Length: 268
Image (cartoon, rainbow, N blue to C red):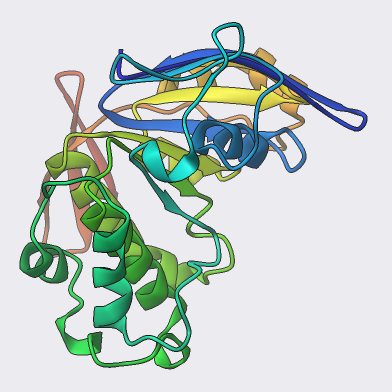
């Protein structure tokens, strides 16, 4: 396993008590507002100190309460993308991207040129963040995190606040990062559609506790999970492969040896 977490934290009336692991690919941290999702990843990133427990990344202990190990946030090798991007407003995109070189690990997960190309940032390198769309800001934030040569990547609700058009713009880049960079990614979200599309595994949080964890499609198809989380629509999810888009506006899917025919959806 690439990430192993077993920690506790009390903050006022809120108590977080979690134990889970994550591997290469996207593991979704899923749950309603107030479940403790952002608190959990802030603890992993070193922005908040746990009361007890341990955190391991790639077999390196970065926090262990009994051994009094608490590696500083900037030494943990974690790339963090916040909901609001948090770009430096006075720096152009190119400078924002290269700023990660000051604090990132030695070596490169990918080169500056490659990151600019795969995230389609060449046209905005000389713009200030104030002149970027929400989708462009998030792509820059993802690029900056990747250029820090992280051991793992944390994406804290990166699509929240974006309209559907901008979400559709950013998601393919997240899929590319997942499929090509081969690092563990923790993806925080309360959106079923996002986590189904992006993640292989899921950790479901409720009131600071892990309700369920396992394969995303299996967990989110569970009636008990839907009931406990108060999800309005219980859905069944299936895996299918697009075989072709027909000229008459129908998409053909291969599913368990059979064919499914659906109205064409651009996102497929």
